[in-house]
Length: 217
Image (cartoon, rainbow, N blue to C red; front, side, top):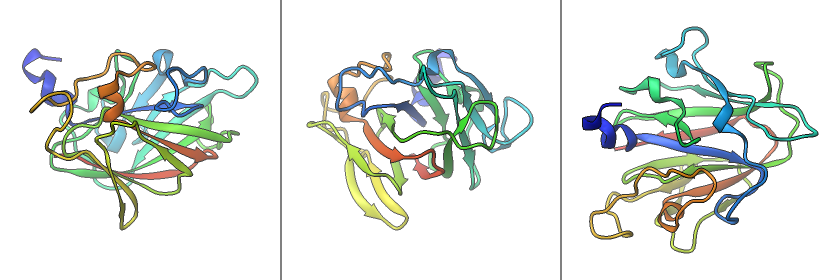
């Protein structure tokens, strides 16, 4: 990643984690799905860098001892645009990453599958999807979740949208100093207070599929 593009390449990226507990409710979770050593297929929206199925697969991500390994499948169901598809997948700090061209939006379908099956839903109960460190002007619309969790000092605004609940990070920063947006988090388990203020955890029951609309400025 070139130094001149470091900030712009991070800002339109959606960072996410899959957990067995709400990240914002606990300092640590023993059920973190292991993005750190995942093998993934990256061709979201048929934009590469891999060839084949137009999807993003973060593979073999569970640390469960007595259950099946799990893949996280992500598919774009509306036109998807990004200048940096090669950054999709898992970054160096063990966060799942989906990049997005500024000023565009995309509808994503997420599903947990038994590893290496491509289509068999995973046998899983409650789990938590956390959107981490949302940047200024980011909107996420989600439906079908059980609960959501925000920090006490949250900067995320919650409202009812046409297709589900809208979680928004307003374009004017109000936390961490005037004009100071959140920086890229470096620890996927222990978020700082400012990172928690820019994050939301959602609780789901069963493997999905889950429909999410992601928009960025």
